[in-house]
Length: 130
Image (cartoon, rainbow, N blue to C red; front, side, top):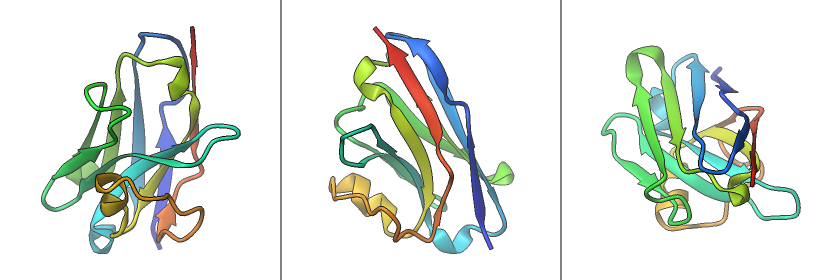
């Protein structure tokens, strides 16, 4: 059984940076892909970034391209989301996901499922003030 634990959220001013971490317990090799989606109050879920675990190929949404970077430390079974030049519209709950289908969600800007992924963390809040 895989569990995902997010950390690193918080409150920052616009233009600031945060780094989110998603630590996986258990074997995640079969999930193939890890990533993040976010959801703000009253808005739809949005796939933000994803990484293929074995190949290291990364994808980020157009809305965060050039500002957010996803990476991983395979030895630590941890994925990271480096968020720079944060904007108030980045305010949301950020969730880590591990699922083979999630990389395609980000790559093709598909709708994010609310509960159909193999593994999902509890979320970490990011608040950006202007």
